[in-house]
Image: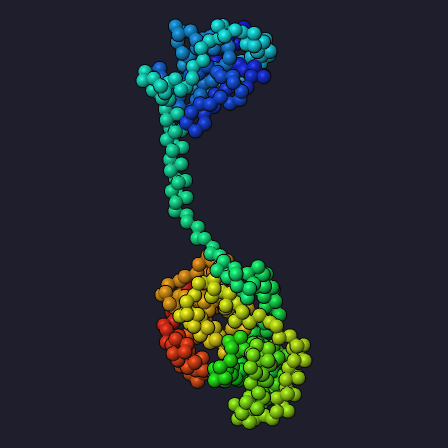
Length: 434
């Protein structure tokens, strides 16, 4: 039979014969079907001859007779050289030409005529022959990889996102089925409620400092009238949007503020302060007619658009995501109200202001940086995205009790607001490098 010489190192394999031994995960397995090849030269460690670790000598089908004859020596490995590789290639080509008759003889052969198949598992079950070195190495390597994967899976603990709406599933006012859609709409609409940071440049008679004085005064008026939080944030929003479109002289700036609060009360409050009360707190600087005329001008300038998302709307949702207690809630509102006075904070959208205020308050209370996956999920802001705004808030918090504009500080220094203004600022955030 062609290629049956025992000195022939060629690798004869019939074209249709797919059975072969492969090394995989530390053991030999048949590749396809039930055809199994006789185990040839596993490793020269078995016969005590110095091995060639970089070579694997495969035996062709024609050499099965040789392996079965126990009296014949097991062929030794030869180092793969260019000459040896050429010999193998030539002999393989010659054997392929004889593949068809070989396969026919294999098909017609009886079980008695077949040689005994040597299985690797037989080697493992005996104490006479050691397990091949490359098999040991493969098993040890795979065991080490498995251990590494187990360690990595243990070390990587993914923080779960809490379902913050499950507790309100039976509360119709919580609109659990639509709350995510509502806040998704708020995120899209908040850009329409924002104004340019530099809108004051178009005003010829007022400036940012005058705006800060007006907002600080309105915060005190809001506190004395015991109005809702929503009213304050909407009042400031109406003022900025109106001033961004309409030039105002200095003596009418307070009138704009009073009228904006009147409009916000009509939109948010159940019991609206009468016009005379607003005139009284402005030291009767304006008449009733002037207030009503300014009201008409403002609603027409703003095209009656009062339904805008302010930081307050996001504060309630984000505080729920942070699982805030009363202390965290009051401190967060104290920080975000400090931002209402500062004109430079207009460059941040309302949702970012709300998220950064809660993050800054958490850092102030805990003394370390803290931002959970649940908060990140519901706010759509990572900790890195909040740091710039948060550092500005820390500066406002640190100097809140100084200067002339202390309306927010005095408001949150009372027992009603839990003395939130007395808390320490998270000054360690100022050392953070973006």
